[in-house]
Picture 1 (cartoon, rainbow, N blue to C red):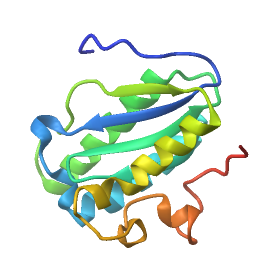
Picture 2 (cartoon, rainbow, N blue to C red):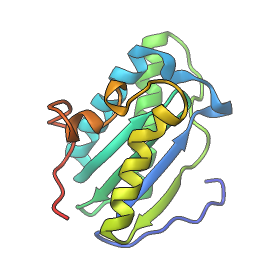
Picture 3 (cartoon, helix red, strand yellow):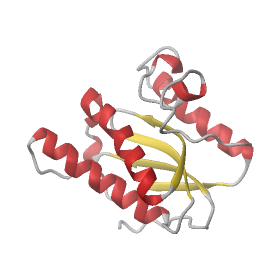
Picture 4 (cartoon, helix red, strand yellow):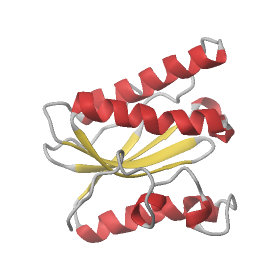
Length: 159
């Protein structure tokens, strides 16, 4: 761990940011962008968490997650990042570290904060100039909230 202190409270919802090593633009690859949601969905069943939103940016990703089982967010994050890296390296035929050490988390403490973080994520590709509108960005839960994609990945939250 890189010395970051993490918020840890049972039943909490977290806004997570994790970054690729040296800010590599790993997620310009459609292969990586298609594989990451599969990895998140796979780990949902193992670690019993709810996933309320995500966006995959070229060199980082954000998601909103709520552990609901006996697993802490640190264990969940270690497995998501580690398993994604191992499988992605196999697909590429290399053995490289792809993630910056650690991750950033913020405990979501209100409905207003939840909505703000979700909007921040969904409009991130627009702010970066990747698309003109959030619905134009393929690798985001915006398409779940305003369409019919990622229905097996995103959990419905009642605010």
